[in-house]
Length: 402
Image (cartoon, rainbow, N blue to C red; front, side, top):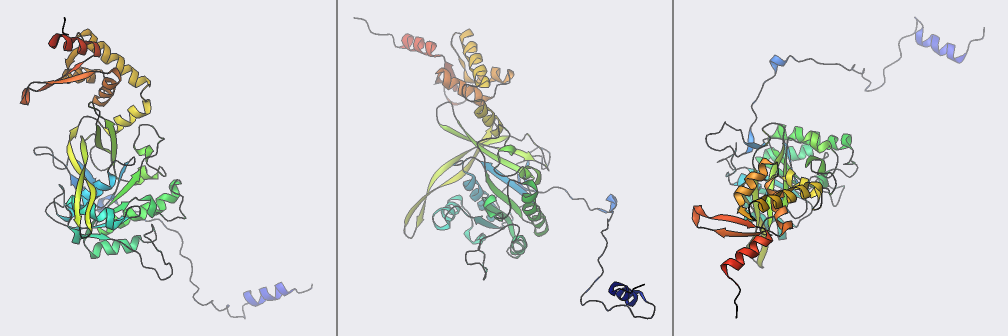
């Protein structure tokens, strides 16, 4: 039998008289994949704490928690709805310790990471207009000797961000907008890829004790579900703990009315009251002259939610939902001679499952006129069909005859 080179090598390797081959430098045995089971009884449980908590006096503690501490919350809406002004409002209250919640009376720092607006002409003046402690708000820049125009990138810079937040006692990171900070190699419309950036961010927020407020835009498509309208992958809806949505509708007097709603709340109650808000013009003095900016102003509670506004937009002015409430309103007023108090109309509309906002839109479509009567607490608003309005005007001011 002929001995081959392979046989000779095998004999040298396996032979009893030969020593084992030397180990390669730095060679280590691979550790097998293992599972670790932890008894639930050994896990420390903790209560949810809230960065923003609007629980009214007399209600159950934290029953109106809106933004949980040390988590990821998204503030989303269409363009021009004041999301950035809202972020400045939040920053101002955290830096001055005036935000109702866990940090009330405990001023903390805020990192404001922005990619779309100018700091000198927009962000800084807005923060001043909102009343922020400017020594406690930090712009974040990236220094990288290998990258001349480096910018904050997720997940690459998450560890650095966490350590900076810890060093400066930061309670809030504003990411304006969040998607612009995701690494360009990540397809933000693929859930698995987006989660690879967001999940480490959520872990860092919990480890280093800061909350992330990510600003996002709504797409035009997606229907009446605010979660489905967030630009990017559906992973946003899976990873975030809360969603604050913003919308605008036309009020009964023809002016725009802004509304904000808590549309997702994994750690607390859903169905909390929505709020109206305003975007107020403000003049901020600078060394080079006045700067004209705007600020967010939280208003009273609203019976209309962002979801309802979106539902009405999806139905369209001539959609089935809009036609139904319009027909109902016309019939209701016709049965009453053409006029009734606005509050009685809306009370009857709610019994028919029509929202206040849908009734306001139907009012405009029908050309209904309104008139204020009385004073103070007795002041009421009456709505008139066009024919009833003309008739009322003729009675109060009859035409002159010659």
